[in-house]
Length: 193
Image (cartoon, rainbow, N blue to C red):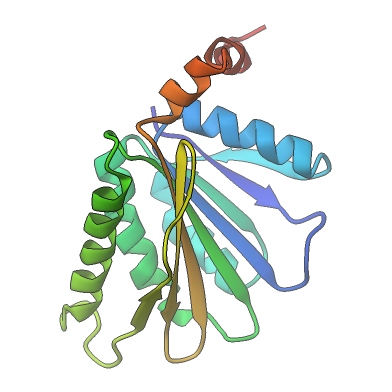
């Protein structure tokens, strides 16, 4: 079941918005726990992924911090492209970071990232999607940290820019958590009391 959360801003830098996409329930629970430890005052409200339009409008209006949990890898990959399109209206006065947490599903995270990057580049080259102004995309070198690989890509639109940070878990977050005995703990968060 795909779930999302909207995080109301209670702390953090001025005009800084974070949008997070991840594959499923275990990813959601992991990130939710990390966020609660980093910023315990942050309010979390569940939202359905179908509400992306409303959430993106609220980002552009600087009213809400969306946290979107997708129902699987394919849906997540499609919705990266959706956000690339929807965030074209972002103003330069608002700093936006899109965090994409995704399983590499193999030990070849470089190939997984290359496919994601190619999908974004092909999408922004589509004249039907961007008929008047085509944003540019620049990606830095990946940083490999054990079971995680991170790539930062900046999309420059006419009136602003968005940082997409792709964090790939090698081969999956579930395997990572299992190796540290944390999968049982994260499943406990999902169980009703």
